[in-house]
Image (cartoon, rainbow over all chains, first blue to last red; front, top):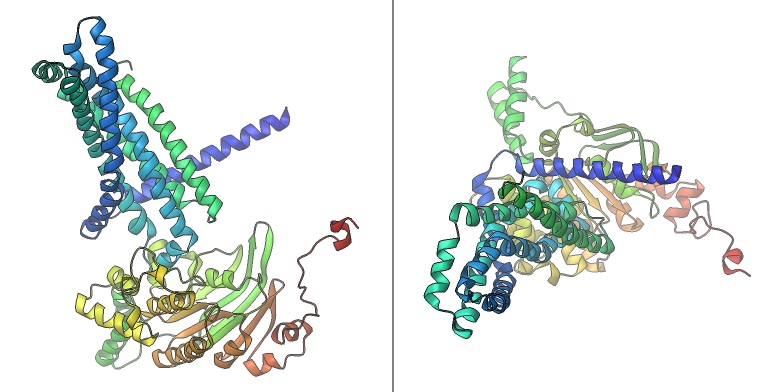
Length: 260
Length: 302
């Protein structure tokens, strides 16, 4: 029993310590003297690596999810004779929930893991230490551009995901299953509210972007400098990132729907 | 009194490398007709240093001095803490007790800004080279210039090519680090470490993995750089012959303490069993080859 309490205490202390260290890490990354002219090209370079190179997986996933959603939705709506509501069903599902959540999960798997592995490898090969020896702060030169690139890229990727998903549902619903194109688009336009649906979806994307990129760069920076250590850090990024997205999605949805 | 205070303020405000410091000194000498540099004889002074890692003592009560303008070798068996000592001098690690003075400043008491200011006067050649793998050789050497100076592009190009020429790799400027051999990577790292004209140069195992030609060139290069640029150099190495040939003073570390020191001749003729065993590479002696373990027969269950 005593051993159990001891272990519980140790886990609790270790959790508090990680939260404290990661909080300090984030504050040192974000709140620093702005050097925008030097930082800008580095952020652009990282937006390419983190955002542009994630486009393929985001576009393909969005397309297939939109297509599947249209197929399932058509089958159910057909029973009630309401197939013209297909556009509304797909748009609200994708913009409010599926876009931010699935986009975030894909981002954690593709960009988050690659950020962690890259920073971890720089740690193993002493690149970050050598940077410190050149009096260049790795938090400014390596971590900060990657963090901001992640934060900027995520809402944009989610917006692209939503648009492609709607196009996918149009292909299946209108072009294949024969739903009237005018009804499809006009119902979608009438039901989706820019402030409530689109902006809230993008806010979710921004929050997920901050959290996933924070987890990714933190895990990479503090990875144990061995091959196994980097492997563990990459796994943690995907697991913690995914759980954080799902948990935060529930909280944000509750707040946005006025539950809290 | 006032000029001296003025000198300190200007130096702290403008100083970012050895060259700037020299220009400031010369300007003040011209204006006031006196030398303001207050230099101690030792660039690095370590006193009563204790360091542990995972509750295991690495150093116990170590004191040593690195004289200004000299090449000092730190030698000792594997695992004796030679690289750790370099990391303590550059404040990558913090001691449990004791003091490390670099150019008269307690390096472990500095905040990040002041630490980076003092690191501008240091260069370090890492055992692995530690080149940035996402940029080519030219950009690796140009990196400190781009980050720490505001030099125009044509000057950066000339300086980088001069550094690469000095290490014999001007022709490899467009190669990526993954295309270099271990020895070439070390030479690029040396060019990068020297590009900002440091006052203190630290070499971590510079001769390991080098072919005989490169090793010979490197030995000469380290000596000539030290003499021509007025550097102070610390070499951590296992290679007794090469290191002894260029070092002015040698410390031998083993068993958490300094077991021998002196000029290369004194160390070579040292009769103490531990130093003699290391220097002459003897299998039998007080420095154990085997890590502490149970009896061999017990482990084999014979």
